[in-house]
Image (cartoon, rainbow, N blue to C red; front, side, top):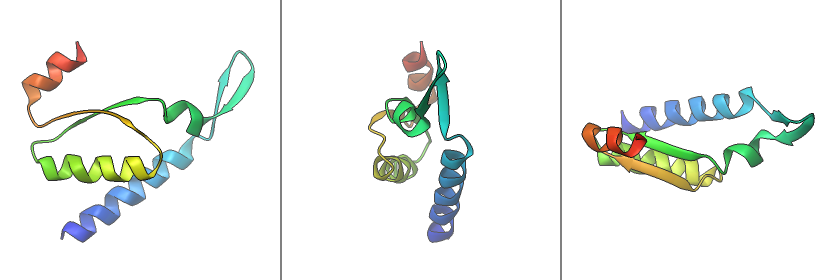
Length: 80
């Protein structure tokens, strides 16, 4: 079952990444990969294993700025 969840997550991540490939700023086309890899990503899940898996896949894709928690109250505080 865990393997199926990982495969599904990977497929959804790839689909989302390919959905938008270019971002325009003041008429200049910038590859979305460059824009998104500097994004700050918040991951909230009640299972630390799910957070670890998501971070691993995102790191493999070039992302590196994560804020993660298993506590919803902490997540709300971090957003503020």
